Image 1 (cartoon, one colour):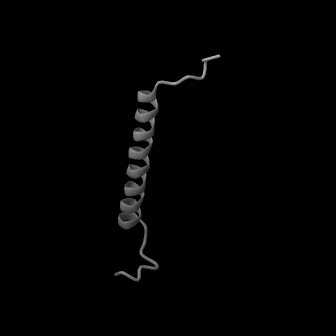
Image 2 (cartoon, helix red, strand yellow; image 1 turned 135 degrees about the horizontal axis):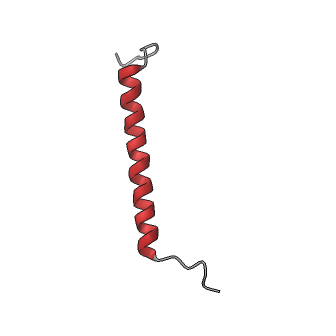
Length: 45
């Protein structure tokens, strides 16, 4: 029963892709909120 055996390269590629997508979404959401959302509570400014 080796039907669930997955190549290590595929796992590494998938993990790296997930990390890049997560980082991209975080940065994109941050820039979107800074640019388009109204500033209501911003103690840094």
